[in-house]
Image (spheres, rainbow, N blue to C red):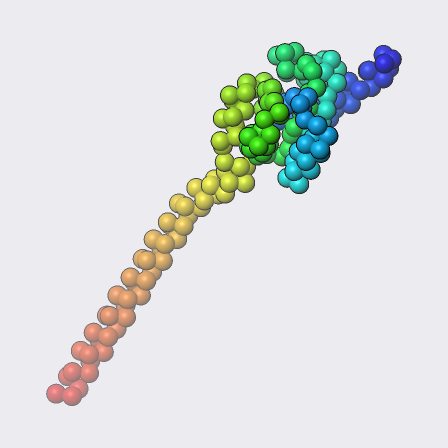
Length: 179
């Protein structure tokens, strides 16, 4: 491969993963064509991408982005599996690995830091991004909801008190007239 082609590939790799890339590195060496296609199809349905890497170029590209420690990971047949929700990526791969023992998880990357296999497993136990956002929204809304309920209760009690006072005044006013 010529130097110009390698340089262009490295530039494209750096551009593709520049910023906050999060994903899982897998070794798909033991997967035959049908299994690899099934994995890609399942991941694609969840909007998760699988990128087969040229290891030497990927090591240099990730080093240029400030991510070090991937030299041992990026050996053999390596692919980076990434998507919008890193926890979802890890969950799907670990579930797929349970069904197909040939898939090997090498490591992961999250917030420009290299993860071990155990850390990838911990990442898979986190709730999805959507669940976390929902929990956060509920947490923010809870004080406002409590305040609104308190104000509603106060207004309701005031209205009942005024109604009772009105009824009492009406009875007091009606009693002397009939006597």
